[in-house]
Length: 506
Image (cartoon, rainbow, N blue to C red):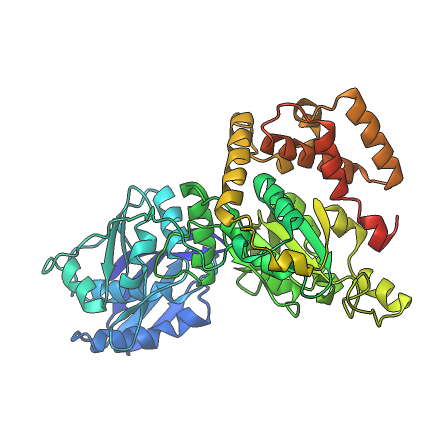
C-alpha cells in the first residue's frame, strides 16, 4: 500500500517541502530508503523501527520502500523521523485517513518519545508560505513554533499520541503563541563604571546610529567592561527583527526555552576562532558568529590576537550585511547585519601609551602588532577612540555615574528622529545612508565645509572615512535635537577618526 506524508528539510535559513512516499509490498522483509538522504536520515530507520515497536505497534514485516521527494534535493536532519514513522503506519493500514493537510516534524527516540529539533521556526515559516497551515511538532518546540501566525501548531511528546490523534481516538491541544513584554533586566549597568565619560559618550553615539567602533588603550582601562555593557543601552528588537534573529538561533540549535529573542544578541568569540566559526559554513552550512550577531553586537576583544585572515573575511559582510556560503549543492545566504565593536591594546605588552607603566616592546614589535589590523578594515569602523587609564580622582569620586537607562533614553530619542526621517526609505539609521543621499541629509554650512576640508587633508582621509564622518555628525546633531549639522558636531565626529595617524600613520 502506498502513502504520502509531508515534512520539511532545511538548507540555510530556508525550509524545503519534502514528500515522504512509502510503499509496502509482500516480499522478503527489507527497508530501502532513497532520495538523497544524509547520514542522520539513513540511520532513522533503526530509530523508527524501535519507536514503533516500543509504542505498542508492530513494525511491518514486509518490504518497505521509502522515497524522499524531490529526489534531486539533499535532505538533512533527523526531523524527518516522525514523517517516516507515520508514513509506514499509514501504508500498513494502522492509520486509516491520510493526513494530507499536516506537516510532520520531529526526531524519534527508541522508546517513541519525540525529541526537539533545530530549525523548527524557519521550516514552519517556509511551509506556511507554501500554503500549509497544520503542523505536528515536538512538545519542546511548541513556543518557537507558535510564534508563526496563521497556523495551527499541535505539540506532541511521543509517537503514540500522534498515531492516536490521527486515528481520532484523542485530541491534541493547540499551542498558542505568547509574546512576553517583560522589561529586560541586566546584571550589568554603565553606572558600574566610574569615569570614562568620553567612552560612554562614544558608545551612546554608536548605539544611536548603529555605528561600528574601536577602542585602543592599556589593559585595565575599561574597554572590555564598557563593551559588555553596550547591550544595556540598545532598544529591544521589534517583532519582525526578533523573528529574524530567532530563526537564526533556531537553525543553530541555540534557541532557549523562552523562544522569541527580543533583545539584540551580543556575541564575543575567542580570538582563536576560525574563519568558518566567524562567518559560518560546514557541509550543511550553519550560521557563524556574524550571523548569530545579526541585529545585535559582535564584540572582538584583543583584536590583533585574531588571525589576520579571519579579520579580513569581515570586510565584505560588514558592507553587504549578508554572507554567501557556496557549496556544491547550492549557495546559502545568511543575514549578518551586526554592529562591530573591537577592543585592543596599543602594543603586545599593552603599555606603549601608558602614563603609569613602562612599555617593554620594541618599535618593530609595536609596528608588527598594529599591522595585523589592515587599513581597509579600519576604514570600515566608524568610531575610533583611545581609552585612557582611569585616575584616582575619577575612581574615588562620590558623583553618581551615568547609568544605562539615561544613555538608553538618549539613544531612543536619536533613533526616533531617524525613524521619522527615513520612514519612506529602505534604511533606518544614519550609518546606513547611501552615498547618493548624503547631500540631502548631511548638509554642511560654509564654515563646516572649510573645517572638513582641513581635516580631510590633514588626516589623509579616504572617501569612505569622509562619508562616515558626515553620518556620525548627523547622529550627534540628532542627539542635540538639531536639524542642522553644526561645527561642534563636526568637530566631535572628526576627533573620533583622528587617532589613526597616531597609531597607524598616514
